[in-house]
Length: 484
Image (cartoon, rainbow, N blue to C red; front, top):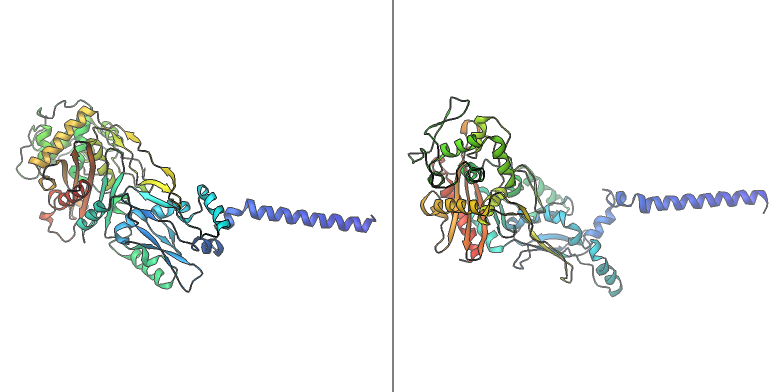
């Protein structure tokens, strides 16, 4: 070969090598980057070219559906069966605005792109069958969810219900809510609908059950009573506590008082929880000290994010000075909790002190309904010994039979509960939050624990109470689970 031809051959070889390097760089090194690029419409077109799998309740009811569109290169869009009811569970899925919550976390299964569905995708190429997404089967109970949502009605608030024996989430309601269907597409109307939701002063897209923390008020006294028993401050729920009335907050000139004329001076734990004595539980928190209170709160799940798999904001029992720690012990000061967290408190007590990790996905299914994975219940912690948990059960059951929680009672069923009316705003200037936490027991243990918080801006301040506003909602949810 003469010299000019050899040079041309070498040059062509280098060009081919450069092309191969460039091709491999694009296909392998930058594949994920290009796949996710905002201007790569092929990925989005493929994503909405087939029906998405469904998110389903534990009793087999689909929360979601797929709707065929027209006039768009996106063939299908997401639809919901009663979107306002289920959006706190599913989140949204939009052609223009991505997705959230279960729709986002389980997107690979729902879209059919999960590696576990490779065989299904390959088979469909040869059979000519349409590609389909898999299903996400949740732990949600349809009747309990409806009872929670309808109980809240037009009030702001949230409900979380758990099976204490497993940690399965049975209900997760938040009001006001929203229908994700209104911005599931990519039109101007979808964009306007989403913007209207985002600017709504009532924050309908806020998941109050998981992402809003409130002062838990007197419902936190269940944790404080648990701390007193676990740390040996008191060994019996019937022995008198060393609690003056009023109780002078430590390092302060401010007295801690009780609501009304209730028998709180040196009251037993039983009487103190029955009538929600601030003086007793504020002093217990101070007697134990901030560290021991934090340790007990942490065992119930405070000060850490919870993944269900949807993330719940961390509830906070704060590191604080003595007077603030005493107030935190009655659920005030900087003490903050999500409704899910307070449902976990009730669930741990009901389950003889064992707290199960909360979860809302029971199993993932292939399009042919084969089970790809199933969640196994998992112990999270042991906030209470079984013996002490049974003592706290006695306290909470007395609250329902003879105390402030009578509106949570269910005929023929053992119910334990605790009311709470939590102050908020500078110097308690805002209307309080109404709380109720509870559980119901059967011969097979406790199948349901509930937390309800209500922000009722329309009610008269004196009419806002956990027993009056929140307890009837919790009762309805428990009855729905018990099928009463």
